[in-house]
Picture 1: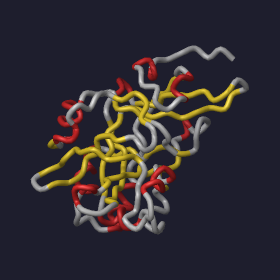
Picture 2 (picture 1 turned 90 degrees about the vertical axis):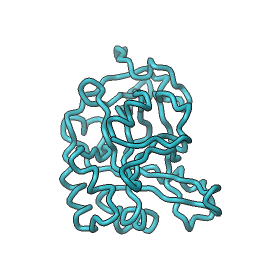
Picture 3 (picture 1 turned 180 degrees about the horizontal axis):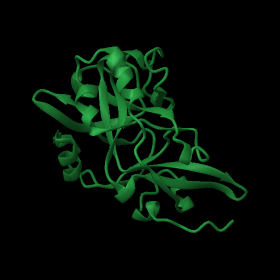
Length: 226
């Protein structure tokens, strides 16, 4: 799964990497070092004339949900079953997105407690996690935009740490993934063909375990002492 991630790049870098217009609602966004469920972050969707990056809350809330609180349990969707789960099926078919990130965290159970690791591409390059999104609520101005990240089986080098990782989509597939006209069979093929890129990892401070801790040292390598 993916329970925390990072977006430490400036918003201008995100806009350039994804060739996306930035919503005014993202004004004031700052690099994030420990994004947690229910946090609001930039998400890229298809828009007239191109792509648009706007704020969405992490944890998908289906339009039929009684309360937005259900989103906290829907931060991830398994790519193998996303098309059949009632909470995710409609979004998979009609509302897909890219979630910009430059790393994510997973934890190892050790005798002294949970040890976080930061997993990232060489050079901490930006990448696109595959996502789906939904709108919940009443009038357009009051609607809540939310998203979930698709996951897949982890590649062998990091499977010792966790058996699932986010689906990371190569740039050549971004347009087809976002396009409204992409058929379901092609969507499955896109996800199945999105082999994980080269990933690196290192242990980081256990302060990361606390949601809300956002200092840049979240991603700095530390020595294991046990």
